[in-house]
Structure formats: structure tokens, C-alpha cells
Image (cartoon, rainbow, N blue to C red; front, top):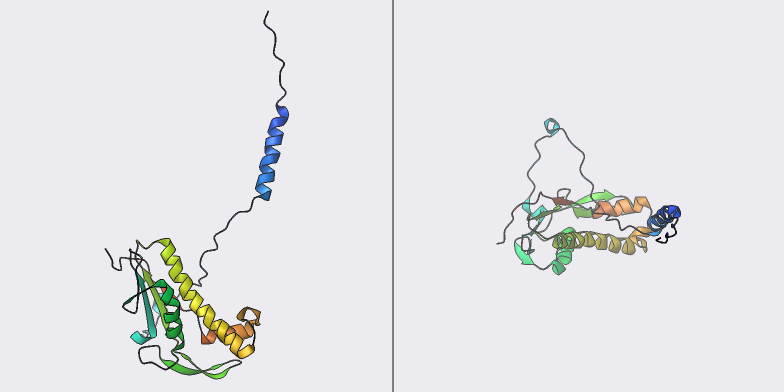
Length: 193
């Protein structure tokens, strides 16, 4: 007569597996992509839009990225490493160069009458459908880094503190001088083979 094998009580294994699952869910960190911080303009009814005057070409900083990840800034092939400096030059126009944005005097809190770029001065970014994500993010990072560095320089120069350490009113005043105006067009074919 064959010998009977003893039965193994497995009823508690499901409980143990469930507890291990809960333990790993609670202790595991999840990487969350924060994305790009952008504020979209408020929606305006097309019937309410008045005819706006044309924007002068010198007030637009054109940045194009083709499907081969080549960067063209203001019609010239440029390295991504040089984009930040070119952007800073566009945003400050220190010598009132006729090819860079027009300037106007505006009353800025904490600064008084200050020479700043005209309201229409904008960075225009367009990339090709085939642009790699890494290049797209690198270009975005350089544009935002230029703006952040300029804001930091003004904060240290005028208030002797980092931009992040300033109160909201002073930060807003600096944003009035160096606004983050990046216009992103819908990706399309912008060149390259």
C-alpha cells in the first residue's frame, strides 16, 4: 500500500504574499516626470480679437530644430551649447543693437523707470516632427537657463540675494524685466534630410 504524503497547509501563503506586496508598494519610490512648466494663454473668443499690429522681425528670436537634431538660431546653424548665450544677448540687448529687440522705458516696482524689451519681444521655438526628445529637452533647458540666469544676476545685483530667496513682489518685478516668453509652434517639417 502506497504511503500517503502529508498535506501541506498553504492557507497562510496568500496572506504572506499579500503583505509582501503591500510592503514593496509602500517602500518603493516612484519616479514622476514633472514635465515642462508652461503657462498657456487664456482662451479668447476669436470674435473679440482686434487686429493687432504686425510684430517686427527684430523682436522675435527664432529657434528651429530639424529632424537631424541640428539647431538653427536666427538663420544660422548653432550648437546647443551656444544657445544660452545667444538667448541672453537677445533678452538683454545691452548695446541697443538694431538687430535685437526694441527697448522701451517702463516703470518697474523697486527699480523705477527701467529700460526693458518691448512687450512683443518673444522667443519662437519650432521643432521638426522627427526631432529627438533629448534634443528638444536640451533646447528647452538652454532657453529656460538663460532666463533663469538673467533673473538671478538681477536679483544678486539689485538685492544682494538669490532670486529664489526674494519675496513674491520682488520676483514679479524681476519677471517684468526678464519675462519668460517662449512661443512654441506645433511641430512640423522644418528642414533636414
